[in-house]
Image (cartoon, rainbow, N blue to C red; front, side, top):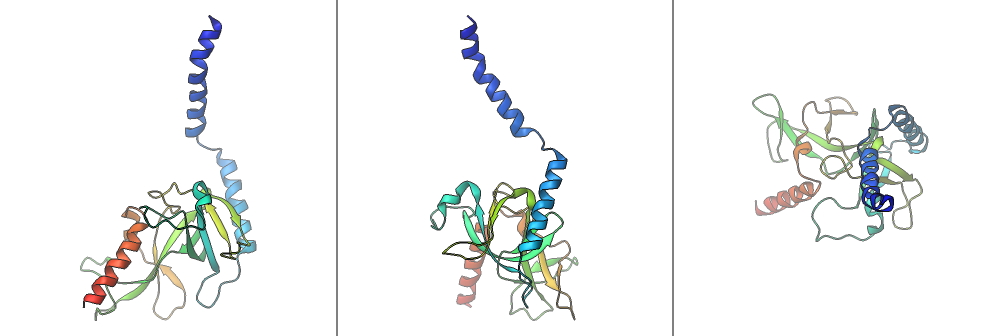
Length: 213
């Protein structure tokens, strides 16, 4: 009888333990220590910024799909398991990376910002999309790279922001008379988009529109 009960309830007990561990909040002290370890590692190993404000190139890789590298499957929707970025620097929770070509933006009637194009004769600024990857989603960094891309490979969990490694995508632009990039206050249109594939679609669509003009 006891063997039968064990046979019935053991899987349920194991399932309960798994669910408890999965949804249990991590120890905040351990989280803090881990963040500081990664911060020190990046501060010590990132090269100095170049004249364009970039530390280096890097490959962002999904640790769950790490064996997909270096192949590229263009038939699948969603974010790629690996892609190239340029490292902008650190922020209070993680790493900032340039994730796309700059976009022209301008003020709208309400005082906010919206996208425009280079042909717009009204006052506009060039803004750079920056993905913010929290240290909490970084699992490992191979600083030496490999035979394909000999610069840092940053392995992340792609479980934030609709299957991406970013917690947000602010835009940065230069203030008049300054060489430094500052965040464009309140302008985060890509935070609402469904995956990085939208960025690719947007670029392709814009290129087609440009060719038709």
